[in-house]
Image (cartoon, rainbow, N blue to C red; front, side, top):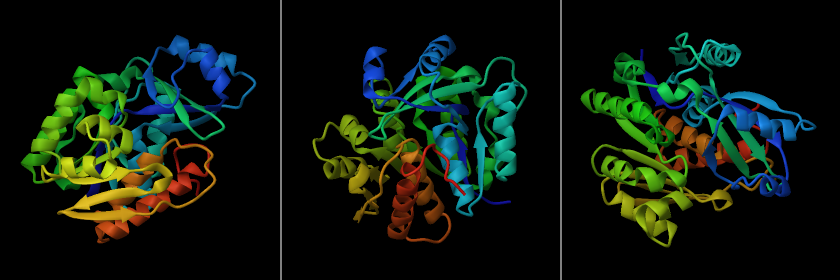
Length: 315
């Protein structure tokens, strides 16, 4: 059995709810980033928004990418950890229905949850309680699936925790052992401050393809322009896929700079835009498309997701 991509990341149930900027300011929530929090704080925020409808969706950054690859007709497997609770059972059932291999075990505790606050400008602000996903470990990585995969896709959020970081590094070691390529997504600008050395070492030695947005690339390299940042990363031999929001993206492959135009849509919710973009590129390059065609597919997928609520493509 061959697999296009084996993803490793947090298994999180998303709770999506709309609010305004005043609400964020009132509750001292920094807009547009992911912040780690506790279940009690999530409940307090949801209670304050009790008049708003909550949309539930099994999520997690790398998980969203694996789901999108499967929806595009590709093959994917996923390493994440959920609990033996209602959210965990729903999460595992979702993946089974999509034909994505997900080796969920019955773990004590709570499945991770993320309250996604969506403002009228379509920006998403995430309050995440990792739950048992924070205990993802080396034992949860499936060497056989990695051997079968063309790419391993690592979620940058994993590097914020010691056991999950060890799991990510183990997956990369196994990928190198079996000549499976490694793709890494930075995931969030805040990670640069705490994981810069880890990311830099991986870029210099292990990563074949790096996904990042403009803010992450500038923070990582210290450059002031997106193209300069992408070229700085590429000097290590790493293919780069750098997103620029509505302006499109830049891909650098084997020295060639590929400018990919953005697809203009009325944005409703930017949750999952980067995840969809990664899915388009990974699906394309593992299914016979050129890098240019893969970038275009990625741009179209990202545009489609921001035009709807939630991080999963509507049928």
